[in-house]
Length: 484
Image (tube, rainbow, N blue to C red):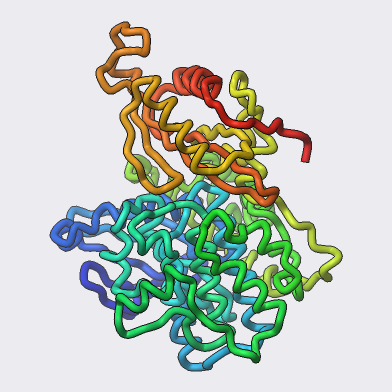
């Protein structure tokens, strides 16, 4: 353990060095009593749960979680460059080449989050760190995937400048569109050195955001201007998607080859065992077979209390992770810039999910994209009707099947079945058959709408059966899925 890097209201961060490798890490020490008193336990658990799934060059890494009676120790990647916010303040507006490099890294990280079914929802320069090479590290996932209506404004440190209109209106959409808006504000900030929406009067600020009232300085290039205006569209269903951002000519310039990989290619890349790193760990005196077995547990080994007593397995898995990240960073710095014609634009995570699954909903196929989404099943159906008409049909069928529901936003609803522990035909229903769903309407790049159904809780076969019966009742114009 080394010097203290920072002190917060419920934690402090200290620099540390891993003895066997000499690699520096940051250890966040969280006091349990303070967490409970400030009601921050859920935020911390959310961040740990999310970060332990992630291995991406532009998302801060969580290596290990250790616990004592009084404290929780999160062993994290050491990022010495500070916040992007301070970098912008010290430099003013950045030239387009550097701004594009940072933005490409941010988009790659955000796309990776979405591929795991995680929406950050609090993207801003204060939550984006820079490493020693001025590369991006997205941090602070405490609000991800758990944000309720109105909660954003209470927990975002009084800075709603980056929030999408649907968030500050109290109708949280909670989809990837929220992150796209925030990325648009960040892109504006790094290109202009100021914010598109800013006012000392909070009411005026909200009016500007809800109305999309801003101006772009004349020195911003036409291509960058075009991208910003498409990201800062007030209607979330008309806003550009991450997949469309990747196709934009301004984004594709000077793109490093590793950033041209889709989120799912990034996931596959990190799942492969690196034999050169295995040899280094084994050379330190560890058993090869035990190392490979420990890596089979995944990152739950290092972040789950259930694995706390597997000390040797934890040691070798941690050493492997640290050395592997070190190697990848060196490889990343050597990566070549590829030409626009070489860029293979991937589909968005939602597009891949929709294309790979069977949308008859009778025998769904669980795709690699679905596996990436936190181990949950996702089903959906294409439609070309008005989105409000689609939602009206969703409500009608939920009522028909005796669901209880809660409206999350204009196009998102959570539902629970059955309310009275009875099936639609009146038979008694066991408590184990309780099912919870999340239903949301998305817009895809082909201007079609996707009705996405996600199982939050309950038995899979009950979920599939009920989905099949429900969607058969929908009176919406269904569009068959064709090959991509």
